[in-house]
Image (cartoon, rainbow, N blue to C red; front, side, top):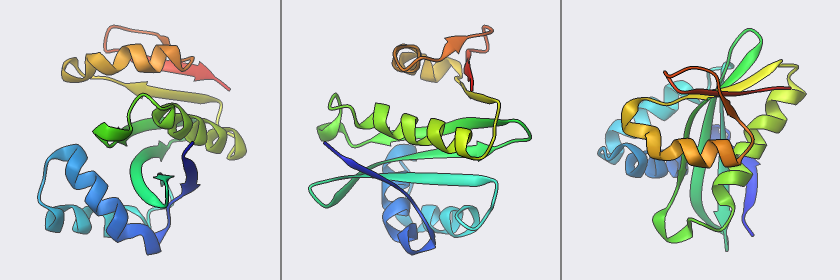
Length: 136
């Protein structure tokens, strides 16, 4: 099973590598994004480690009364092992710890293959924009 932990500034390099895979962008572009975002108090990242190697991340945005799931990525060779679910649960737990009343994600048409994953993890569709949310 993977170890999930919150990411901090010292994790910027590892996060930027994973994010470059997620967005299919050059690593140098991603390090700039992470350096800005990982100091923003309204953004939270979690990392997943398997056998001491970073294999995934989750990103959430803290809103007034909610935490929005912005991204979840698990390296292809580590999928279907519960890592994505554990990352989502880490964000859910963080939302509860910070007193948020809702936990949701919005999917665009290109991400609809992810809809099944989120519904299996307990989020419910609330509109055709495909907003999946849970009251906390």
